[in-house]
Image (cartoon, rainbow, N blue to C red; front, side):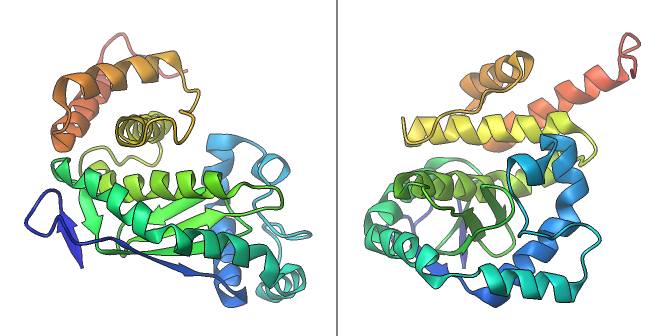
Length: 241
């Protein structure tokens, strides 16, 4: 069940259901392999720098290889402390997330499925069912897991508007517009929880100016960004390199 923005259900606490396991990790690795071309375009050598896949797994690996590698690497005790931490803080986090209901056209779920994983990027999400993936590793702090969780929930909240007005998967600028918007919302409602990403200065200035002018009307913000980008792309002075 979802609630769109601020409404009469705003007092309902938000539930976080934490899950993990070998079948889920196998699915996560297969999805990461599918996404690999896009991830490389955005981040470069993702498996070298971000360690997004199990040892020995690449684009040429078979499903059997994935199952064998994930099963060999899976250690239940790596996941459990993070799961316990989220469950223990669920009441506090759920209350804090209620603040996001005041944002116009922001999608809020009554329950989020939080899947802990050792693979893929640091965090990802599905706005269809309120599911977020949070990456764990040895030495990762529990506080950073919570901050990534909030970051991904904000992504879920604006993703439908992004896809409606600004979703061009071939345009890297759209991706970074989206990331800056999520950072700005996060800093406004959860100041100091997560360090804002170091993005291109033009991206920061463009998004920040529109955000200051139009917030909390999220749809107006995203439509304005879409129009600016379209004007730049169709300008006679804009040339492809």
